[in-house]
Length: 509
Image (tube, rainbow, N blue to C red; front, side, top):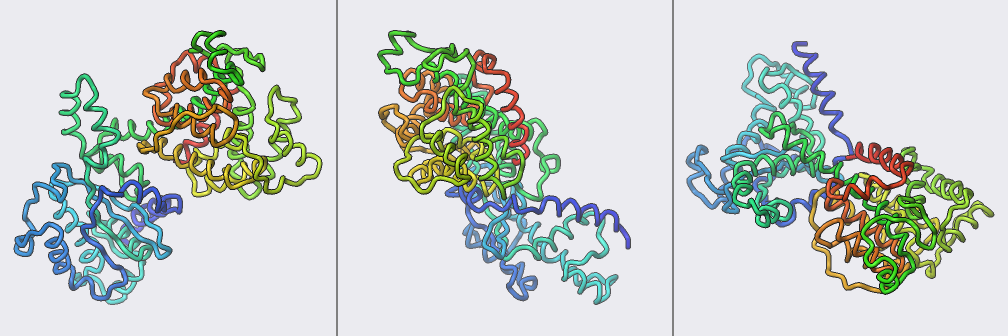
């Protein structure tokens, strides 16, 4: 068969891209909420849709743009989108038969309507190509059933793609994305607050179409998109993708730094801290555990236990493996271990069983080791976090906190700005609600440094509060915004573990 090698290559590429990891209803809905409008919807199951395609395009686009001239001419130039913005960005979503959405294509164009018309014609006219006299009826049947046939040189990939879409999806939706609204929280605000605002604003106006396209493609894990074919320069693409790794690294290091620095002031009051240190601004060790500067507590140590199990990629035995890892760590006689964790691990050691539901176990032990599962880019992430938490803190209150924490971490890693409810400082205790509340409060500081310094100088269960706050702020600000003096003093064995897990977790994005 002519071009058979090309066909097999393209088929393989598409099959590699086509995996369940990119089906993510929640993320797509979050990203597109209030910043997209439906332009055209294709019902795959609708009969005779090809014969009506031009009519449907005209009708739907007339409704959308409220412009009667579209019927008369498909060359009509749209100088502004529905949102009255100069940027034009569209996304094609596929709805699977199980109800899940998938991001398929993303593009930007001066004339979004013309771009969509072009893609629709590709889907219908070129897929069936009924006017091609070189094909017999048998080839036509094969084409409709999704089997290969002779490619036209310029659209060989498109042909296979089209058949793939029609075989896999129940509905296709073209949506226009409001670029300014989509980028507002993380780009425009920064520009406004920058001293070189005018220069940056000019750069932004020139590049936002491509920037938004790349960002949307990355965040929705779009299947059929390549930056080098989209007009997006390599630097922009790498900047966006590297930012995710930077935020992952920031979260991991932010947690360990908060733990190491907070251990110094753990169980101290604000007045005691002020009397002893004035204001603690560096990792100095000491504290009630008499730690070496850069040494971490059970918070990071138990988190590393979870990291090591996650890196096995064996979720079937996850609970037992985590419990065994906790037990192995417990047998090393660590300097610090919470009462509830000690009780649960000892029970597992003696009986081989896990503790039952316990509504009195409301310490922060499950939260302090929740970061590894929260960072995992998998639909099983939250479930795994519940599993590791239940080993020592088996109740709904702790699970609810784990759920909210996991959501916050994931959002910040993906560069989303969450409008979290403003918190008032509570007593900095080990009670899980207080710990989480105060961690969120400090994570909303202007800088990562302000976050950690604020948390550790508030005292109480400072290592866990500062650790959780640091993990959130680290994901928000990224590793590059963490003071190097804090990174450099961290225990080197801990750093090696963090780096090993970082490489593992980065590959899930």
